[in-house]
Length: 216
Image (tube, rainbow, N blue to C red; front, side, top):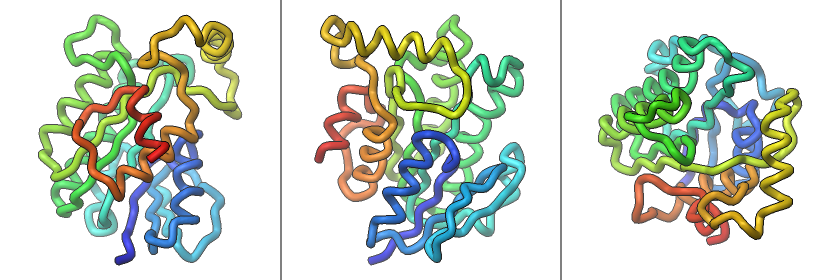
């Protein structure tokens, strides 16, 4: 039976890789993209909606499908204003989860981060933790929160801090526990795709387990 997938954040590194995988997936008949900028992908499978992502709740009629993949995320360097940062990393995923619940979408897969905690004194970890908490409050049948460690890959933007961290993560990988080893965006995207077909016992999935799911 063909499925309809929704992707939020298809123009980002992991989201774009997930999109390519779903384009090659014969079980997916329709891919709905909700974004502020175009993916520039031309395919009969793709329905692209360029919208104000801060007003996602207005998309009730078009936000229908079998699964939501939320790949939304920003960084402190890219979005230094904390209010805007929270509107992106917290507001958009939670709004998407509420729409998924409202429209009886049974599966919701979202990228968070290792170390997320709503009670954390670290702003980034606190926002991710609050997002996880409020997504789970929607009680969607299957919710999977992926908690990757440092994500590798080449980006089109200058993120010096992450580049340095990636260098040390690769160089000293043998010293780093599995849970904290760098993970590639292709691996995260593959795990997200696999979760569409095979349920997993946990709701929160740390980096080392994401890698295992990606190889199933």
